[in-house]
Image (cartoon, each protein chain N blue to C red):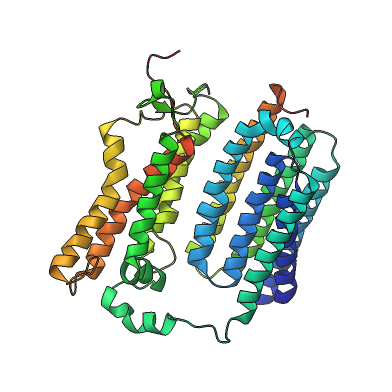
Length: 314
Length: 97
């Protein structure tokens, strides 16, 4: 029975992947990509990788899906001309050959993995007590490989700077996205009033529970960002101007706290991002709590796009 | 007692699955956006509701059951809002219904 379900899941995943590739309409391709991400979440759950499943649902399907839908909406007017400029047959055949070669290479790598695959899981299990957290994923992300997590947070910030740099000169420092036109008393406004209190509790809970159970700041921050985006889309509050001091502080605060604690580790524990004996758990909680609002603001502003208007523009 | 609860679960989940099937058939067969939305909300509201009610006796603990009900309520809220928004977008001259 379980095998039949797994096979059905794999079949659906492959079908959706093919659909996403061959769909002519960009929007149709994107609407294949989002359920693909959600089904991938089920696949990760099947593999008992709950942390990965949550990240896939929040970031892979949710956030990336919204980004792609926005991109597809923006590309709509250029869709037909783009098809007219389709590359010739030789180019397409060459692209197909190269893509197939890459896929075959990746497939070969997966099939050639030694069995059992090399793993660091026993090393993590042996040393997890020193971090004070119960969830091995959090121990890896926040202690053993804290550098990767720090760089991820910084990369998101750099991505946002990249998005902002697309702003036209006259809009620089202004508000992102189009001016809100939605009637705040519409059905969307209703949802934007009912859902955020629940979403905020869920987001903070996901962060808090991440110490011992699947969860963490990235998943929690995505939920918080979604709530804020909902409020902005419903026209209840406008997007903030990107030159506001509180916006800049919120964006830089999390990574700054992370780096400061890393430097503290360099002085006290003898290594950058090393935690002093016995203080690992509280410091991890401080870093996670500081990163949560920063990541939420970063993700939300990534989705609202570059600044497009200044107050007083018509 | 256990046997009766199991039968209740099987009946309720099967009924829920039927509504999902009917909703999917409607989504594929109905002629325009509005009727398709009508079919879809049956799957969300009734189908998921029956599945949740059917699974309640199988949960260990009241909290787990409450979480299931919360999931159903959230889906109700989301699907009702989204179908309103889709219908409104179509009525205001979006893509052909």
